[in-house]
Image (tube, rainbow, N blue to C red):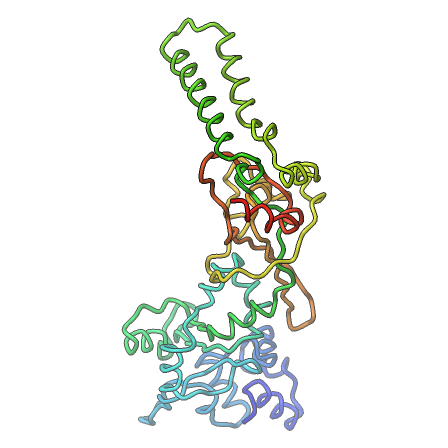
Length: 363
């Protein structure tokens, strides 16, 4: 069976007519006719009837609208957009089964997951996955045909807001197939991994913490606390944060001699390929999700850099061969947490992979 737009084109060629002539004769905008012929839009009942009468054909297999003069409507057919065409037919029971089992993700869902407008999804996603279209039977705000969304909602027993529903497996496979790279630049590790004597380090850290707490309490209780006390408090905190450097193990010294990452210049830190974490696509983080965080810069992604996140770069291609990229992030699935001292240091992923086994063997 030819698709609807190909059917119309073929009949126009046979009758030696142009789309402009048909649009003028029927009072339909030439823009609408052009979309019908390109297959990017489905004619509603009124236009379908006009075109069928003009072309001398019966449109019951083109569009599932109710018939006049007591004729039975083809209620067991519903338009189904596929990878090739939006006008191929699928029986209604098949459509309902698919909506309940395979075609469970709507265009609205995809927009939210990929943080993209509907026009973007229409261009880069929908041409590559199977989908079912449920006409709402409306034109210019008026009901002119069966509202297939409502019919589906009643049969499935759930609210259906979107007209287009996509095959979830197709969508997941498209995303996986669009991955350009999965990389990591940094690793956040507890400093206790870098010291020679962890117990001695923890004891010294505890003494410093006790002294810091004493000074802080004194400053809070006495409104006339001299500035020297605040200066001492600041110095103690600084000394505590770097106290691990005086007790480094051999491996620790080697790590600290490497070029430590700088959030001020993230491009200077090498990106290392890593395995894709087993995190659902819905849980991937879009950079702009964190735009309200003061430490995040849209260009540098400092937050993700400083916390050792994994970057996933996707590349999508539209039917014309144009490509576009999107970046997502996933938290380090092997994030490390302190056992003794709540103090961390940021190192490069490259250095971590070099010394990880030795550092972890001493933990």
